Amino acid sequence: MTVVTEEVEFISISEAAAKLSTTETRILMLLKRKALEGMLTDEGWLVGAASLASYDSNETEPENQLTCRASCTSSKCDCH
Image (tube, rainbow, N blue to C red; front, side):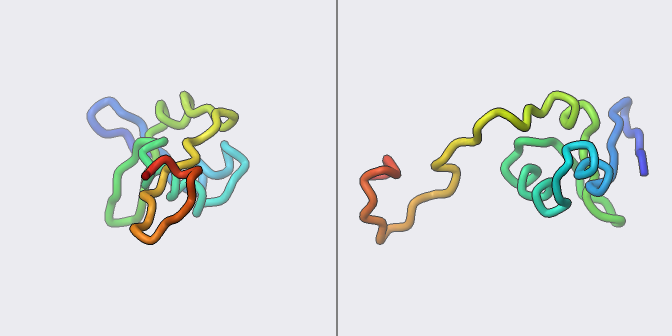
């Protein structure tokens, strides 16, 4: 499914997953991390086609994406 809003093209997460050879869950995670742009509709999430085209799946993601827990004792997380 392709949707065009305000001159911006969006595709379904299933199409996005197929284009990146990954899973729909991974696409949702990338949307949550704002690595991909998207929008939530009544039918579900849609991914911006331009965002998908410019996404570099070989680029390494930040290791410390998640916030460290207060009880963390790791010296590798850089939260201390």
